[in-house]
Image 1 (spheres, helix red, strand yellow):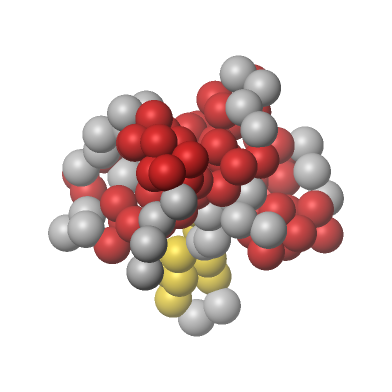
Image 2: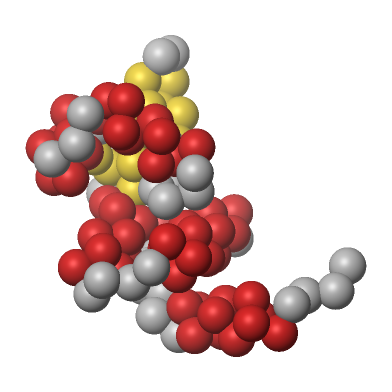
Length: 103
């Protein structure tokens, strides 16, 4: 698979802004907190996750899920900085990749 040069440059640019967090620093926000922090509805929350504009939640057991606070903070910072959807999708992808390597 060949990576498009523009995508590679964007990934490299976004990777420089990723927060460095260790598992000891993880804090979890539940669905209600996410709705309040982002001021969005449940439908918008699901649409943004589906479109790669928000990270997916982590399972907490049973039917409970939560979002890693530093991931939501990073997405919020990109939104405040008026970064485009491509930037935010790349950021979310890198955050989810970082999550896999957290342990």
